[in-house]
Length: 242
Image (tube, rainbow, N blue to C red; front, side, top):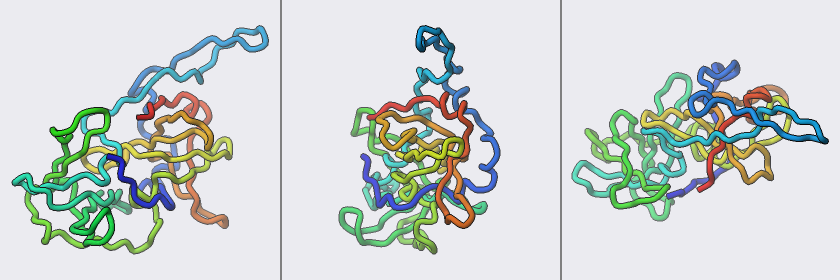
């Protein structure tokens, strides 16, 4: 279920200084080697690296953030006790957390509480099927009332998944804008990849290293920048729309 919260600002102080250099992992190598294709331009046959045929598939333990937001939270007895309100991606060494909503109606009201990823198990809902199954979070040790309440010091500080999804990001090598459509997170809460539209009019999506998205500093304020070179951007694997 894609229950997106407000998509105001977006991505990641948590993906901070270390992201300014080259990403540690080349996701194009995870999926498929770069494919070279011959194209004809004005009668000349040229070899290009930007014919994307690689398609990214979610690995075991990976979820789209938008699928996790709005998911049911169950206690060990299988009773639904809350919903996932958001994903706190962590910052300055703090661990990612699941933000749950205790009470409220249609994602409004109630109390927001946090649970560590290590205290929850995430699995596909056995009662659903298809490409976008619901995700169930089962609390293991804590009861809902003992979980700490969530308080956000600064809104739109790019530390919540909902703040990232739907925002625009400047592409460093071209100065053009791309749009962040979703995040791919692991069962430990790591925002591993970002699913983006390569420009504001494209219907296609590609997958890039989430650590390549940083908060811009300077006189222009805190916009987001995708720090990738042209070749890496052009060879990023596609991500099918669902």
